[in-house]
Length: 194
Image (cartoon, rainbow, N blue to C red; front, side):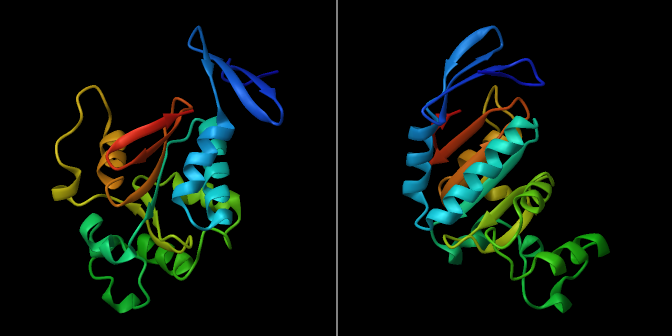
């Protein structure tokens, strides 16, 4: 049993978190089952494990993030604009800011497994989504969904949730909320919250 800096009580058994006391209530936290469902959607076991661990670390620090693992990377243009893509030709960066081009240069041709978890966490904190293919290659970071995909907001939910629902039609999505929750979306549905 541990007490976090945010006043939560976390109970662990068998090497996994099983309960959390948050907001005056006990919550069942079946971390092992949540991970199993997440890893079934990601063929690369190392990538599934890295993204799940980074999402849990971000949640612990109360940092929001959105990870999108595309089923088919060829559909990335339907999800995000060309300016947000990490591409091999820096001369095509157009009107992007110098800062974003520098970040693109640093992260071009990288994958989530070669980056240290702390670097991946730092990049995930940038507004927008980190978009990857099934092998954990970074396609984009700080990506804002195309307006045609994002659609209308979901009543009672924030823009990160609306983005997660929309992006989940293209692949598996982990949403990290600033309230310390991690959610898994697939096919427009939230399959679990942890």
